[in-house]
Length: 114
Image 1: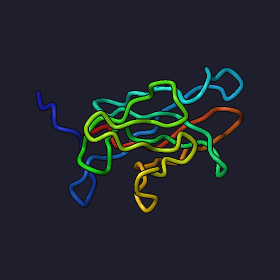
Image 2: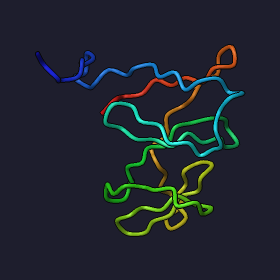
Image 3: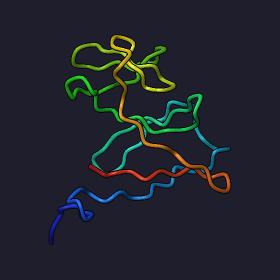
């Protein structure tokens, strides 16, 4: 049995729809979310809910939530705003974001499970 992900026409892993639950019953944000091997933080910024990847765009370290006002990369200490993922150290850099939709009070997102 193959463990390879299903690929789309471009050879990329297909996105899967992830149900994140009822908006009214969300735990406090940011909230960690796992999709396959991929880790995210569910956040709410000025443009709505989104999932921010825990993979640092700088050099691929893991971004962590240590309870401060920002997420911090364990590799080089880069910090990211918890609402929109903008880097405090380099404002032109952002955490990878996935849009979260709300339908009938439920949150969902299309995510690549890589």
